[in-house]
Image (tube, rainbow, N blue to C red; front, top):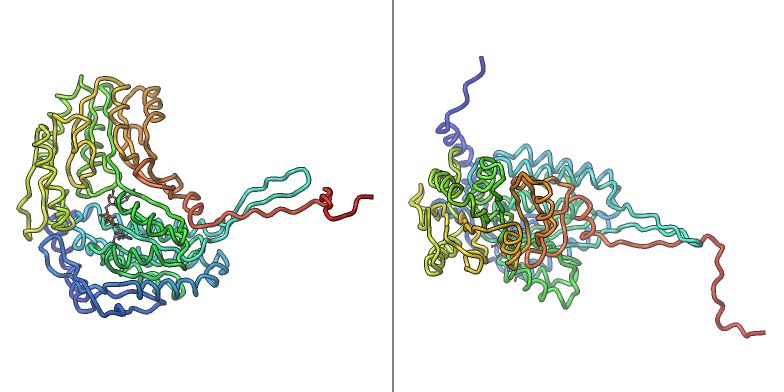
Length: 516
Ligand code: NAD
């Protein structure tokens, strides 16, 4: 007979039991930088506290890096670069697979720590660590073709291109799904042969610390991955300005992207930006209603809505708007807000009190603009008294309102009805962002026309966001610069070099030869 599934309350308790010794160790050890293979405090000795959004408990003192710590890390990354670049690709591949093994072994620990540090629900974080390991495996396998190029023969030359790693790079990551996102940026950089200085988000340093230790434990040479914790304006800014750092891979807000571009200008930094979004999900009246409903709810209320690819604008065709909103309202009312370690929880507390304030400020913005808060619209009294908010659904909105234009980055959905295909595309494109778009229709011709017309880097037709690692990931307009994923990542972390070999058949113009 099959073993009975454990009860939800038993899983909740098991998660808490798993977290308790990890948290005790974290509090005792604190979080230091990893520089040149050593865990070190800041040169200044300064620290800041990282707190849990569940109950504001201090999780650990964290080293507060400054320009001098970044200088140390960048210097070490520059010293380690040549040996890492020149290591046989098969060896680099083996080491990155070992990192993936190490992540998989600690996946359950990573999941509970991420829940406690960020407020994300365990049902999603359980898979985030595994996704992190997959990122390392995928790029480990690509190590051996990272240098591949093209063969472009001309009449008298054999022309080939090859790629070489750009050098030591900076990776700056945000607090939403920080473990998965860090691996997503760091794995391709290491596979390309770059060394890395990582500056994780100050609101979620815990799993970045664990990642650094797992990379070291896997045998990646000292100095290849360095992690410097600290505040964006301090450690982050210094990293973008350091002359030894050749490129910055950044994930975060669009306004921070602008600042980084300016900060990196004097040292001519190459930049890769994955920025904000205000993504539309467009539901036509011929769509599969139940699937569309599932996807609409999932893509804004999973991960607390703190997700760059969330579909935060629902564009629904007027002919079905009332019926669709009625069903949607029932689903949003039934969402379970709770403790992140409880497997039944669908929405946990938001990352930080300042972010809670930002999300809640949009309730007033919605009311002032004349929209209707159909569900939610206030904070939620959750376990631990943390930064909980009610999942919120806003109807009666139109495209010009702030709630239809600005990224709220919480469980907050704005519904805008549309007339026809042309009107849907106009509304969808009428924002500064262009990250993703989702289209629901049974008319394939229309699906393709709309996909073509949407100003967004990634479009899903009759699907929620399902990531396939070889595909290009990135945004248009204010949502980003460049693409990640598959070979696209190597375009950023590597320089393309052209080598031309003469066939010995061409004549070189002769200058300085007296004419006879
Ligand atoms: P943020 O821009 O405030 O911070 C991101 C990182 O940048 C942090 O590590 C921070 O310390 C650092 N930073 C801040 N100021 C800096 C400066 N002047 N110089 C250098 N570094 C600096 O973003 P956030 O609030 O942590 O994250 C949420 C944002 O990230 C949202 O806008 C979201 O849409 C975006 N995001 C985008 C993607 C994507 O793939 N497009 C993915 C995840 C998150």
